[in-house]
Image (cartoon, rainbow, N blue to C red; front, side, top):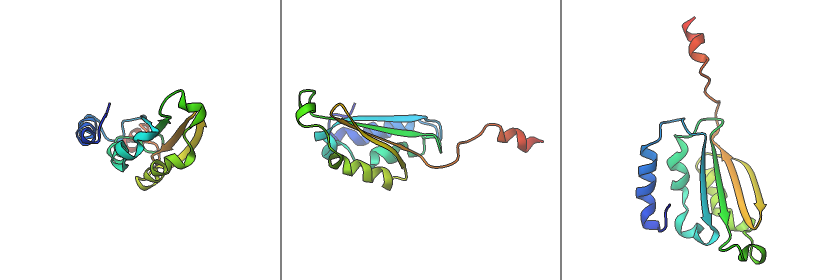
Length: 126
């Protein structure tokens, strides 16, 4: 959990040091809409890019309203996530899905590429 912008760099570096390239199936990011400008930037996405499996590795970003009470009166809008949408594209991801759900906004993107196939090793040995 990252509570302030000062914690972001160290937390991301620690997390990325534990990930092998092309080994992750998914990364989930959850944040409140008011935190987008202070806690979210492209480094959140680029940190995990190499760890995600090509063609199948997915980033799911769930943007919550400020409170459950505000969900009905002030739901997260498409314009609220412009920064996230642009960051996904700029980091090299392919936006696959975007939807509003219960006052929140969900974006899903995949790392482009061809999924690695373990059977390829067998073909090389023949």
